[in-house]
Image 1 (cartoon, helix red, strand yellow):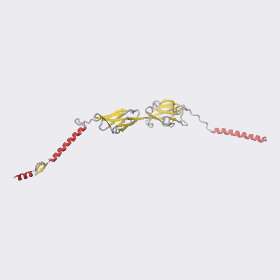
Image 2 (tube, one colour; image 1 turned 90 degrees about the horizontal axis):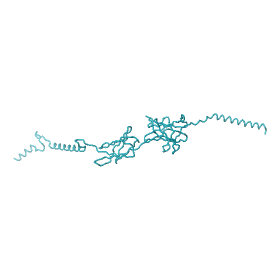
Image 3 (spheres, helix red, strand yellow; image 1 turned 180 degrees about the vertical axis):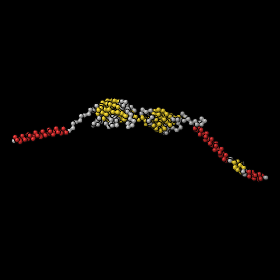
Image 4 (spheres, one colour; image 1 turned 45 degrees about the vertical axis):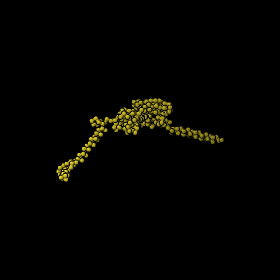
Length: 296
């Protein structure tokens, strides 16, 4: 091979290698540097009462748990007087849950996703979480992580009336539950049974009313035990110590006697005969005179 041709080939290869290196360096210079991973070591959240849009009330005492699996708790915390909780966090934490006795707590942050019916929420942080000194606020612009409301249960039982020593079911009795915020109402069925949904942990004034029976009142809460209501007849003394039934009977008899007297009066009403009023059951004067002439 000609030395000149060999030298030329070597020079071309060297030039191509140098061009490739320079191109690679330029390409690397154009690509943005890889972002450094954001270090999150804590999650901060806040729990409010419903409705959150009006007169917000923070809730203390809500138990918050983080989970690494469905059966393994990572950490447990409780919301403080400001409704705030802070829990440790690392890549092993997958879920979070909120519980409080007699309440239902629902996660509403966009980074929380309900995990079936387990009561857990899967934590899916945004691609660019807001982190300050390693603490990420686990809530959206609305400012809350979870909302809490009272769980519901039933107040149920039966209504009977004590009549002359015998108990009988009361149909269509009105059953009302009263609290400082709520009025709940239902009616008994043909067997005197009632069932009304109410909030757990709330003390209600229960009022039962029915026609002809004394009102019945007591304080109740939701319970597994039925409420038994026994009502009594109203005191119907309205005139001279007599009850309503006897009073109506006496008034009815008086009206009958009055009608009889009116009928007797009308049947014996005096009639005018020759300018003389006589009772119509007497014989008129003309008839008496004719009878006397015939006798002569």
